[in-house]
Image (cartoon, rainbow, N blue to C red; front, side, top):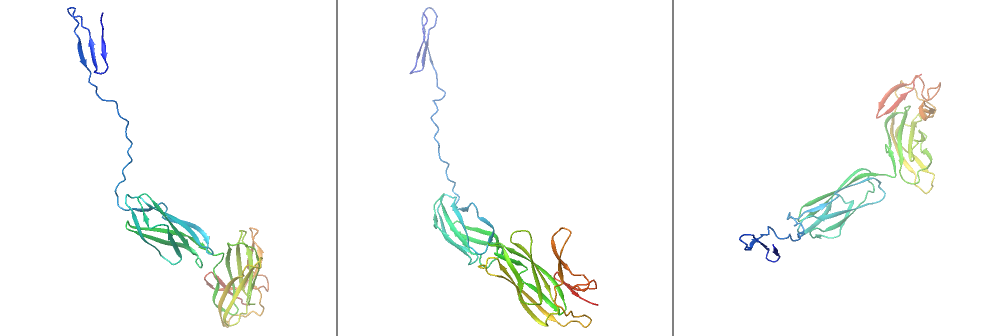
Length: 307
């Protein structure tokens, strides 16, 4: 009877051999190519030595368009992305309107600190760009605050500067008035001088108006200083004041001085159905067909009536 056996511990196998009736045991040793694999050890990636590095995920902050009546606050997060400790030496801003507060001056590897900023926009308008510099033993990190500051009430232009005028000059000018604060409803508009006629026209957009200004000759000779006063429906709101300046000189001998003070424009309805102010070209009106253009300066038309 043929028998075979396997020795588990030694890895020996006995195989019977049918040679001359004698059982010859062949011992075969199996060499194990490799032992069972050991579970792989998960090693944390080593931090690369790169010196002190101070980072910020959002170094440039755009705050958009804001009113200049209230301070603007923003927080920057400063992060140490290296394997060494970062020491912050100082924080500087490019103007006195930006205040800063740092939560800590020593940042361990992989840690972060909070830099609080507050920007005062009082008295400022238009595009803004303010830089904050953080100095450390790593490097200098520049942070910026950008955006646009607007006034609660803004007139473009800010004043009516009419320059030199003849005493019989008939001048028409306009300005755009934007009201971004609450409330926005206006009550009345008036000029403190009888030399000018003013009107207010709603533009169809909430808080947007057009101011119409026209001279009422004859104008008194010399420096002319007056202003437009616009009041809100809410009496608690301060009035809007827009200055008017001009210098009136003698009328050329060839010109005729008008004796009546009346506005040079009438409100009419144009082809689009909107109200507009046009020169009065009716017979005996403030601007007749015989008007001659005698000057154009800074978008200002000056007419001198002739008979």
